[in-house]
Image 1 (spheres, rainbow, N blue to C red):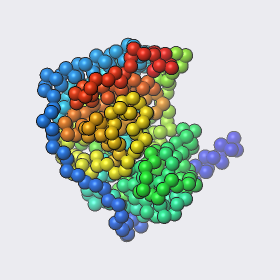
Image 2 (tube, rainbow, N blue to C red):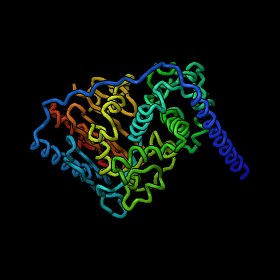
Image 3 (tube, rainbow, N blue to C red):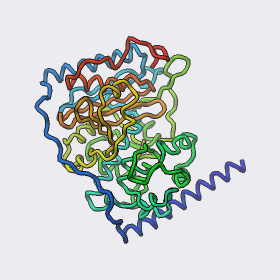
Image 4 (tube, rainbow, N blue to C red):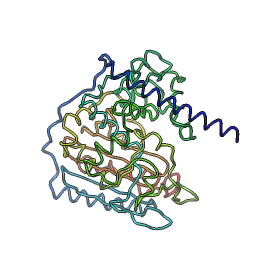
Length: 426
């Protein structure tokens, strides 16, 4: 009991201390603007190619993907999923499949809310770009000007780490620093403090290392800049203007929906629903968003340039521009190994050369949920898939759709006729 009391007092002290430093940093930042260092690339959007499939071909594609989604749930014994496919500002497919909960049989609809996991990072990059456009921030604004207590073991990196570096995973830390401790329920402020204990892999801005804890310093910067909580700013500037009315942050908000997808994990040879874990909700920029497939369809079209009053073409060009090479992405699943020729990280987005085509992409995974989104800006095409289990199969459906849309050689990425090491439950 004594240990628990001391731990709570420790967490309370760190939280109050961090908040005080945030306010001091905000005041200091208002007085002093960081000197220029690295600035975000801005590129002119590529013209739409003439090889866009005909309306008949688009409809046929949507129907094929719809049938394959049904096959996945039937053959691979999935729980539920939802898919949206868009061409320009036209919705080719927007549908729920399967169930929100295998014990109740409630059907997934277009308004069923899922956790997005790391698809949340694109909202962080976009919100920050809005603040940069307004002059409230600069891409080369230094973190220590807003968070003076922030430390890294590499002192030079700590003094020069920028907003852009955080959003492009160029902090100079090993991949996924302190994710395991977050999953073990250590508080976010304590984990930020511990970043100063980690050996650097390079100077800030010089190399890629995917982060969740460090990435979520974005929320602290937004608070120091605007005086408002990060989630409130995303709701005000992105969710509401785009009409994303099921989109929220946090577990309480997820569970308050009329229809929400329960996470499912493998137990005794079947997908079993469990309660959503709170841990990654504590880092909203990295993994905090919930949304329905209908709202993701709106978000996808906005990212393709169909909401210019909210997201300008220049803003989109900036957040989609590649900043750092990510060669690790060329390995892993079979479609990555065969299709990807190059891979980079932008600002909350991955950027791939997919069989010679420009693909803006991200995936997300937390316990019981998975999500993938892919945009082909040159073709004005997008697809997003979310599902409430830990199966890897639906992710290959995105590659299947891209191949068919781009008329690439046919490959069986789904492998539905071949059981995995988990049997048919995969």
